[in-house]
Image (tube, rainbow, N blue to C red; front, side, top):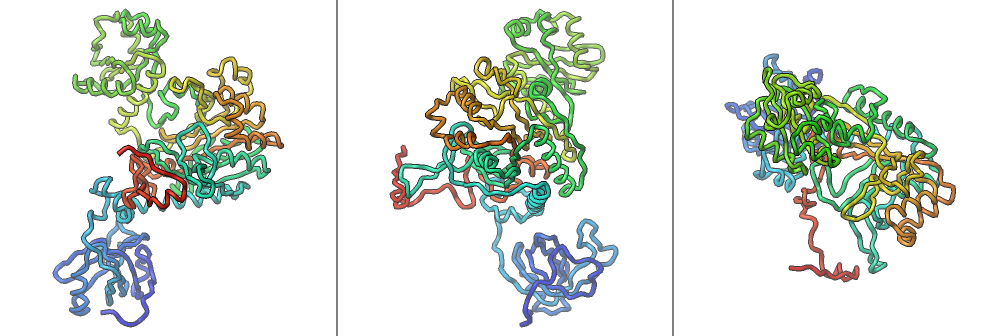
Length: 593
């Protein structure tokens, strides 16, 4: 069955074409499919390059044919044979190798596979838990390989682009100092310095600022970051950033460099052109029109403010809300009528999950306006509300009354839910937008102090500098986020580069001088040693690949992701460690059973 001749792969499984007819080829790969058609056996042989059909004909000998019959799915085999052009009526136009097949002369089974827990195919019918437990099998699926190869290409384009633009790639430490703000740190105990801990970096923020002080001018890094926070579809405890920093720049300079990268990424990975400069939208405008600072611009359904009309409506809930400083806002569902009582109830429960007390619907049919509030609101006010939304027969209006933040959040999420239901989120359409003019600070009721909206090193707008102490909530930041199809894929800012300004920022954040020096003393001192004006940005690389790949979760573009409870089901981490390891670190567990 197999000769003593040395077995060396001559081609991969996605390589051979009609021009290769009559060549002798040796392929290696996995048995993706097995068909026995009356003695002639067809195998789809797969590797990461593609699939080639190989054929075992009984005329080549009983031993070879019998061995082919016994092949199990996902076994690893090597075959040697001749490239044969398929008859025209047998050509498979859906496969790059569909014009040929290999007439097998020799077979070698390199490793027989046992019965697997699920079939290696798209779409996968296994549960997410099973997929993660057997990730090495899940990663064989064509869709997963396509995603990881896309990720690989995006890595390479990024490195080439920044090198072309004069950036220097510098690695920063994984073992660093724990600092306040942001999410919880992952802590690493020191064996040598017992009782002291390193933290895994949530980002290389302070290091890249130090590199600017060091005179490197343009830095980038593709870096792993860590945050001990709850996972969700677009968040993992460990994630990848494209980290960028530049000296002697303003906001426009950073945005131009990023837009150049995006043009290259779209062109070289998706074979698409994208227009620059990107649209810019203020934070306030994004919240007002879309209810979020990550607006998806692939569809309309913008939020309208009808507070002025609501105040005159005579409907007590509306008028009381406006009189107490709240808002009445809504969105239009084009051709959404008629809605059943159950549908309205379901949508009401949905918005209540975002803090709204209720949901008012106005349905239009022909010349009639139907709503539960019709008996309270004068007809002329109702007509004006309908005009405000440019609504026509068949449309439905959804109105929410409440604090501005609640109105924005509830309507923004309702907008996304309806768009998903209507299929308005075309995965083949990409609309980027810059969100700018963020608030520098936001008040935290839980912490009873101001918190940095981005991070404590973000520079205030020059014209708002005088308000830092007197009106912190009104100060705008030199900050910017890049949003693509409703996902924030990058965020950055111009940094504070003077110690005096950084000290004022720490004071507003409630950090006393001693704490600030303990946490950031090295940075504060560096700012006094000739720190240039600088700024930068960090891409959420996993999230960006997710959007490029048209996936709904970053787990689909990460090789070995964690579950939503930060578990790795494949290698069962986190795990218990030996007591001797703890003693060596000077640690003792105190856990309630």
